Image (cartoon, rainbow, N blue to C red):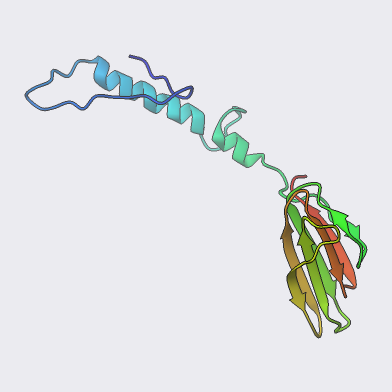
Length: 142
């Protein structure tokens, strides 16, 4: 039996000493499976675009460019991501989020001095900051 991997998982029967005859096909099947795994993982610096090594090396940026937002304004998240609020005037700063418009669930609070809040927001939720001097949206993906 040749390997089924990577389209499906292989299944092997357990062999017992002095009961089962081990035929050449048994270790050959395992070798086929190992070769399929190696091809899927890839060698260091692989140029094979379907290998895990290649895909991990070419992920790109996890975050998009920061997008400025206005304080005390309600926004709806177009993707799962983060709102980043900064305060450098010592005022009370809060981040609200939720499914209601305007959002009423307080997810972060900071007071005094220089503060930053980075709050995860789910796609479709509304979010708003109060007391922030700068607000940024950092979306996932480049």
